[in-house]
Image (cartoon, rainbow, N blue to C red):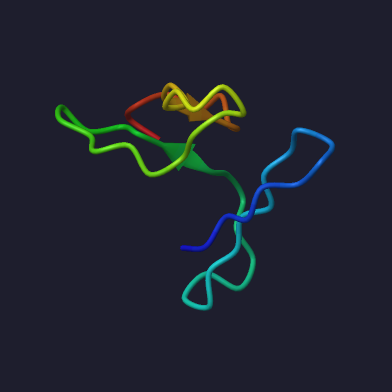
Length: 56
């Protein structure tokens, strides 16, 4: 997955393996090595763009 940073503080996420994504989750493992950093140089915390339950 590639996620270039944009000036308007948004991240554009895309994957050739997922042509029509419905949601994005970042950092949802027990031990995550950060690959996304904020302007201040600190790692961005875990986030998700959906509101699905774990069972869905």
